[in-house]
Image (cartoon, rainbow, N blue to C red; front, side, top):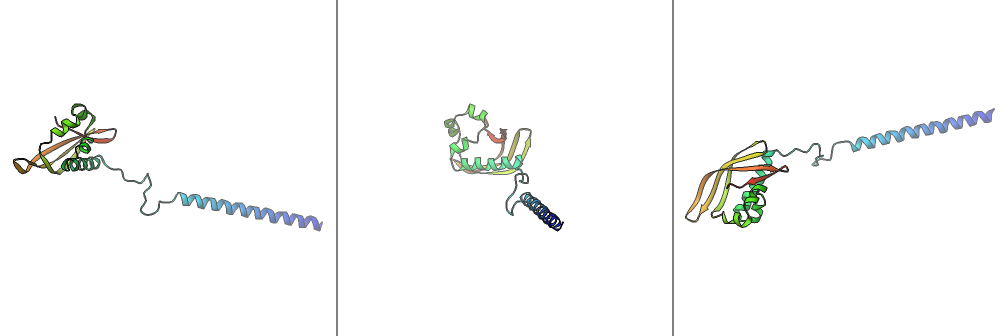
Amino acid sequence: MLRILKSFIQEYKEMRYLSYLLTFSLAGALLLLAGCASAPPAGKESASSAVQETREDMVARRSKEFWDARISKDHEKAYGYLSSGSKATLSLPGFMSKTVVQFRALEVDNISCENEFCYVNGTLVYDHPKMRGIRTPSKDIWIFEENIPMYVFPQ
């Protein structure tokens, strides 16, 4: 009988040990999962918390890049910003021939978007062979093609 009792106690201790082992393993797994689900490290943004760039911000950035290319006479780069409709009616050599002035700056007053179009209102500053520092009102039109703003070249 003593032997049965000792065997029973031994089995009970082993079951308790397994129970503790299972409990601690489960707790460890939960802590690991909780760690993976925590906030990203400082300075890093998760995809869901990233701030989406507004349409106006996208147009402002692309407009600046376009005019920087025109100011630096990088015609091929500037031509790359033209909408597909503009490119269908204007070749790169045609685009280059339309630039008879030296652009200096586009001073943006405001940007507004309606549907798939955005309008950049400002003042264009350029030099003509006979005059320097000419300032003229400008209203650039940008159209979204596959969620990318593209410049509509005035005809």
